[in-house]
Length: 162
Image (cartoon, rainbow, N blue to C red):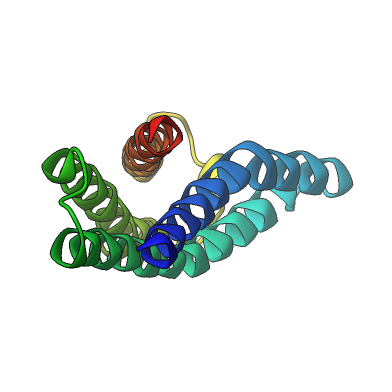
């Protein structure tokens, strides 16, 4: 049972740690560094870099969520039912749903919008419909990641209390 719980916690740490690292370190550093080095195209390059990192990382989220759900169900079947089983499954499912929505729905729309605009989104006038749509999609993506991070933090709190 300890091995299954270890796998569960390891998947949680990888998923949560990755989200926090990308959001708090990778994205801000990429934008700051690339914009400093190349004031004209740096923002576009940073957006491409961070977008590519996020697309790759979504797979980590899908796998981690599946591993966590499998481990939790295994703990329930093999041993005594874990405390708060239903709440934990709900949190993981919400995190996974947010990650899938971002990776399968929102991010592809962002990529299509960037490709079809033909120019960097930041160069468009503030009222341009494409820039407005991009802002809405970016806010949705950020909110969904924040939801997944909040769920991960709650699960970490849960694990430290057990």
